[in-house]
Amino acid sequence: PSSALVMQSLRVFSLLLFAAAASALTFNVDPSKEECLFEEIQSGTKVSGSFQVSTGGFLDIDCKVSGPDDRAIYSVKKETEGRFTFIAHTSGTYRFCFSNVMSTVTPKTVSFTLVVGEPSKSQVAKSEHVTPLEKSVLALSEGLAQIQAEQEYMRMRERAHRNTSESTNARVLWWSLIEAAALILMSAVQIFYLRRFFETKSRV
Image (cartoon, rainbow, N blue to C red; front, side):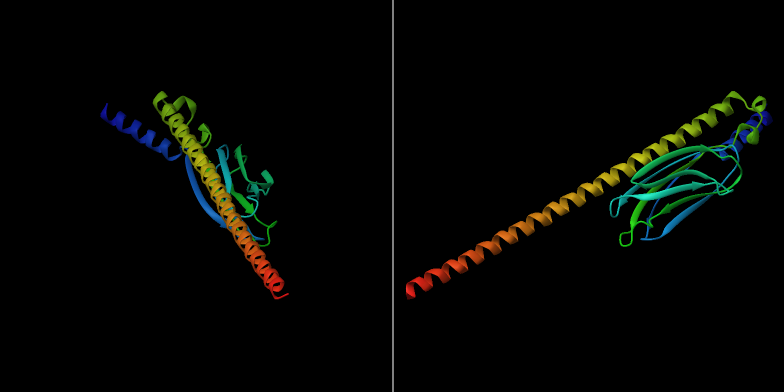
């Protein structure tokens, strides 16, 4: 019984190695440049991801996801945020590219989350060999990864909205300072000309 328990524990651990994993990162894309991320993915694996532009210009970017055969899986242009989900059609290196070629001056800050699920059950273990406990472990692991990705996506949105709010507040502050300076300047000019006017009248 103890050896059977050890074997089952090892099988559960091996399944966990294939379980869904979420990764998140934030990076800059310079003007007129393209940044690509690469991930080795097995055929039949469920992949989902999301991105958000938090700072830079009009908060837009081009995104393209390509398979090992250069087939476009997902492609959008000049988007602030986006989400995608697909099943890997073949094993190999998948590319996730973000292009800022539309901008010649402003860099963009992009937050990106990628969730790579477990391969199809046939690559991990045949369905008749997977116990209910192992199925539950796989389902729970994938669910936790999805929750983690959703939390990261909400953090990205909150960060982008906070940056937008701070930028708007800064612009309002500068505009208020410019208005105040313009009023002071106009008042000073009016006082100067009024004084000149009365000085000229008094001389006459």
